[in-house]
Image (tube, rainbow, N blue to C red):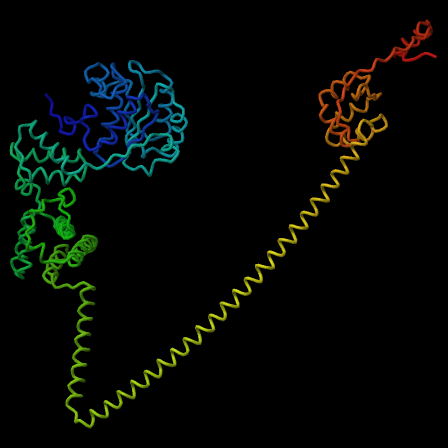
Length: 591
């Protein structure tokens, strides 16, 4: 049987075995159970945390013969084909190598064809941010309105490079880094599967070096297994990979604290002789200072520290303050940044190690300010004591003079206080007078406003009374004119409506007669079309008549019967008929 790497062998085959992404798993499973399956998904997050594996699991869940189901069987033909990667209905595309417009056009052509065996035709595009701008534009319309049987799943480590137009059309899922504890459990399980012994320190170191990536952890695990045979220990890892152990760094710091720089430089030389690079030493020292600083801040979680808290002696932790540890961390960060310009990186490292012997003597600005303040206070106290001793040593005459001077000074201070008190009372009286004047002005202004409001109210009442009287007079006038609409007022009606209701005005021009029959105003017109318009717009005509003469009674529209004219006997005259044919006309009247 061919060798299979651990990352492939331990790839999740169902959602329950996908570790560290509980939110993503629960959301996708709920969507499948509720049959709320989107047409496009965007899986984003760091490398090696399960984005592509989740895409395959989603494809398996949707195309399983017993699905769509959040728990695919893994035994049907479609599940087995998707697991092996040879399913024709699940197409995996590498966005880094298939990033041209032509590649996307091929996808657009293939989308038109239905899936061969499964329910859905699923396209998984990995590293989708590598597609060109033109390729994204070509894919845009297809993503927006794909066929009902097509689903797109995109995976990327750089979400910001995916155009917003693509992101807005996808359901986004953000995958998180996996913590050290979870990675350690998975590595122990992998070691048990291979019947390999692995101590906790070795497993913890591999999990820490993976920096949250499960794939990186499995890859490093395979490398360690290759040279450790059946027993993985941290000492073997350090020896084979040329790493600095926490014990070596602890020993160097203990020697620095004891000011034994000879042993410090000897230990550093031994460390470099084992094959550890200067750059790796600098990174390990910077990481060590970071860990010390975090412990100083009260953090004990190994997932944050990167090591076990018990691995660092209390002597080293208690020797340095937080400010001193910050200075040490900054020293090695700057050293790593500047080392590429150095004539010899080892010289720079040795110089930095030498500087560490005075690190515990470094005082922070806060401590320096406190010391300066204490020194100032001591100087002031000593000066006061000296003056007091000098006064006590002088003769009694000087003491009497000093007492008189003190009394005079006391009287002067009392007089000054009395003057200040008098000025304060005068100022207080002035402020009280000013407040009284302001209050009086406010009252006068308020009375003026009230008087103005009363006058306005009175004027309003008078205006309303006048308006009421005018309205009553107008009503009385209109009432007196009621039922007085006659044919001679028709032009006023027509003129009133012609601006806004031209068709109604034109129809009213055809009114030929007006009658009052049983208190009903009857308007006659000989034109049938005008009669129809007037009936449809009765409300407008009624309002116009009411405005002109105040009529409010019922209105009725009737068609006037026009008697036909008697036909002239000359209509049938042969000469007249001959003339009509000659001019191709129509006979209107014959005298």
